[in-house]
Length: 376
Image (cartoon, rainbow, N blue to C red; front, side, top):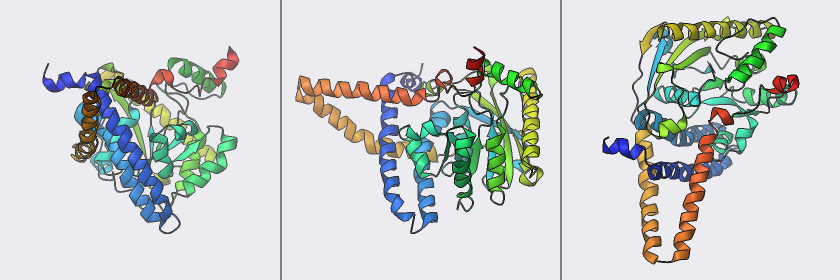
């Protein structure tokens, strides 16, 4: 085992990476708070600044995927589709099967220059997650409670406010509403059968309201829908902890572009279009399981140095005073000071672990289990 491979397995190193992410995130959130004064004066300048501030935080996570674990991401698509990446507003539909599916999406956003301006329709609980939810708030992310009667007005207002967004954005939709589990899949397919919809093998039944509303509100801004089907070679099920330990994965992403004018204007017809899309996604996953690859030409977008340079900037800025402080604590010889510091380290470790826990499948939401509970 080389030195770098050894360091990737050390808890102290993980704690230092977490320290840089958390403290830099707090600094970035503080700056974002100050930018609020720009909102009534120059909204577009506010948005451009916050895109770059968000990039400085999100790119640290992308750095872990690209440079720390050296995970490779391969696109299966065509050259015409690749040529549009980063040059238009788009809605992204991504299957929600893995703990790091969002991170694979972010690395593609980074490589095509839209990481800072990327958007998502997120569950409202995430608004209260430190750093992540706070940063999203300043980015005008649309939050929902996943109860359409309560969400309708909020979602429509949030989506329409993005109509004049000054930078190209990719708006992510997890149409399944929650991460895939066998339990949720069984319930979902029971619902599909009761509604006369085709059974899916690898996906949950898509929730159509968010998709049809997003397409309707963003017409005139968004020019295409990118359907992305993600899987990992070797039947791997990667985790953020695995990335932190430097485990290398190979992600394959099949990307299909649909011009927005191909999606029906009528809500019911658009919902039918989405159901058909998920049948096609299911077929793509079946092909992948049989052949180990998706159909289409393979592309490996080159990773850029900016994520690594950004992390090194924050690490240099924050770790130097930290090391000086730690040396001072132990040099003081004060048991109280040393114990207080160790207690702080323990609390910091717990906090970082809690942030990682947000991505874990077994700690995912119970959304999708309501029908199961009723049947019980």
